[in-house]
Length: 446
Image (cartoon, rainbow, N blue to C red):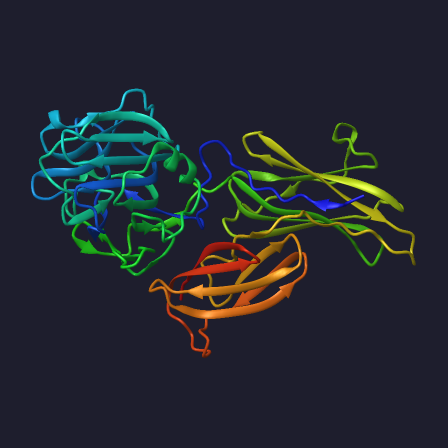
């Protein structure tokens, strides 16, 4: 019998972006991010996640994204009450705007919004909310995209009534029209940086002073401002755009005392009360016994490891389930994993990992001074790992040769090939395992 470890990545509702745990908080008064136009002129797709803490009022509402040359509104996306309002290739005239119907925006909820548009009445302006088309209208033809781009307000120093109050995360800009299927298929994933048409990607996970990093080269880095003054506020804060709990692994192993150790690793947690462990001698959760007290969750956005030892078992085959319980009463059960416990002196049948090859989330992230790159291999295969800076330069390379099936980890101390300490910033980590290529990002802070 194959004894396998459960490896699960869950998508919960509309949340689920594979971010590294932070978002940018806007105070609703004078916070804004200003940056140069990353490339669009007459064709654009812009998308982000946002969580309002106050709903916009009046005709204009609170700004999520904006590009605003002079009095024209080449792009201005606001929340007005429970709806979204969009100006595109138009002017400040309110009659030249589009408003959703039935968006039902609520305080405290995360939403993904994507806008596609091409200038000219023969073309269309479309807005998708959580991948659902909410606006589809002929485009206007009064202005191109403009020279500046903003998150969180109409422009630097604009009226505070236009300022966004809440969180913005994972902003992306393209010089192509993304289809609805493109948006749905990628709103919950990190897209490759060489994706056709991608000209700007701001994960909003980390900054250096007042600088917000663009991951696409040439980088259009943004400046975090209070009004017109560069300032480290608005602040980076933990973001629950990521999954409420993302279980990386759940495994059973033997101990030297002939007990069974249950270990599970989470990449992110939010609102989790804790975990219960269940055991049975048959493959049936319905009749399984609860064997643990509540194991309290740490609710960290970084990787967390838990362990529980079952010291009340006799030789035989045992099945285990893990229940995670949220504060709101929701629960999810993982498993089973199984372990065959032998008599002292005999061999034991230790479970192995599921047949899967994957690059798991790096941890801790952000990091200082070291970071770990965990990955799984489904079979024996050659492995290479590279760390790349935002200029596309390989700063560290590991040729690991053929490696066996299972879980492996590479540690990086933040130095380059010559042993020199690298600077604060975002680094891309590329893993090639056999013919499969994976990419993650790691943020070094000092």
